[in-house]
Length: 88
Image (cartoon, rainbow, N blue to C red; front, top):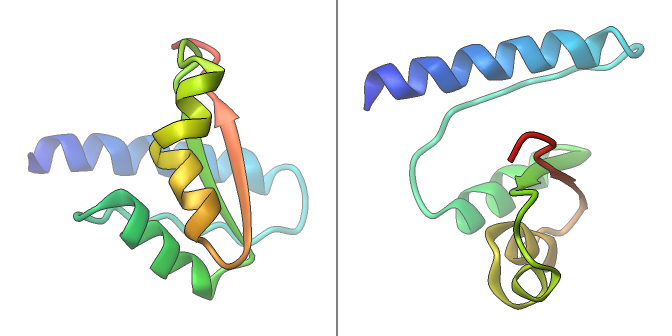
């Protein structure tokens, strides 16, 4: 599990570096455990934007009825960016 978390943290650092190149942005990434919807919704109260991904092959109907990203969108009090996985 810890090796997987280190891999995720590495990918998040790379993504943060790419986002910073787009302008004067502060990017913070964390790896957390727990129910994704609860954790992201609570953490998002301290940030301007929550960014979540959705698999490319996920049907629109599934997106509307119960995906994690849709639940975060409903529960979060602020802005949510939902991005499809180009490779998924």
